[in-house]
Length: 478
Image (cartoon, rainbow, N blue to C red; front, side):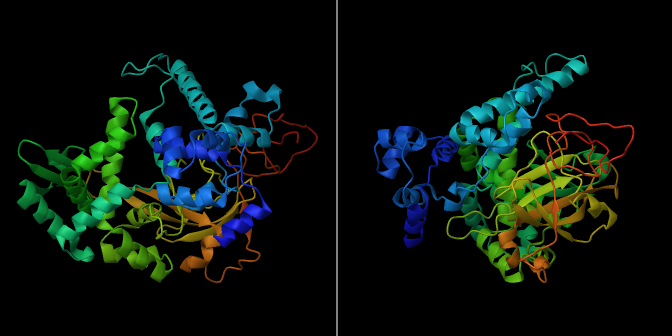
């Protein structure tokens, strides 16, 4: 309390935009939040409009009422400005001269409006692609302006900081009933499926699976797993099916609460939530967090204790946001050799590019040159925030032919201030680490003289001179 009081005396906190965003993400009305905080609705309205500063007492009530990490409301939280900045960098807005500060201010004061602009811009890009292909409507008949199910679920998971307390509690209850050693969880899960739900688990030849890795036959009550799956993936498949059956009520309630806009998005959300539950069964919160902290977040050392893969453990690290027992707030990204991002999760702030890939200066791309080896790097984003990152290749079974695998890279990172807790950062000079400056996608990055630039910023003028050649292949007017 004394620390918060001191902070209030030093600097008044105007967090109206973050309060509105929090209320929107929680799905509660202004009247209900005011009641739970013990203030009047009119006072909360003043707080949200930045006409009153947020006091230390209100911060503590927020933390208590919503099981909230106060760091998520800190003044240095980048909020939603990054997405709006990308939108405003389009050439159609070039004459407006909207500054980065102005974009961040709009996102702070009106997070709903900033999100609406991002969705509209995404729909505009989708519409352009459909026109290029000669298609004007989606195959399912939905309008081209609709947000895609994948983007909708990603935005929701990001708003929740990839932590779902109800699923953690449910997973712990299931694990308690299994009474199994985490290193040998498979037999207990298989037995539970058989004795409680009469579901048989079978490992099937790849020819029978016809391109599927996991399939459940409702009529025969048979869970079929491809022979191409690694042991950790087979375990995940069984835990996924067990989660669907044990947690049907909780999964349905959560899915209903978030009000997905259509059936496809609702189904995708439920699949994600059950995948989250399966991972929580395989890696129960407290034992997993304790093992990671004791080992200095050494994934390779800890993952055999739970029978999981490197990627499964890395993704689980982004979910450790329980109040009073939080882990290091990691972010994670998975991409292929062409730079396509297939996964991105974050327990803390990280400016993922919403309309492009990862910066080529981040050595996550170089991991393909050193398969199976963890490579580290300290990066700095345009807002001067610094992060410690580690990247490693992983292999994914294609499911089409036995032994055929795809190579991907998993990039993991956290704010530099947490790096001291990581075994991979030992020996790093935390006072002056060697830092590589990275940016968002090249189309909006304004870092000059970058030899790896793939395009000039949209809101800058390309500078081409026949008498000289610059370091960057796309020089522009500063």
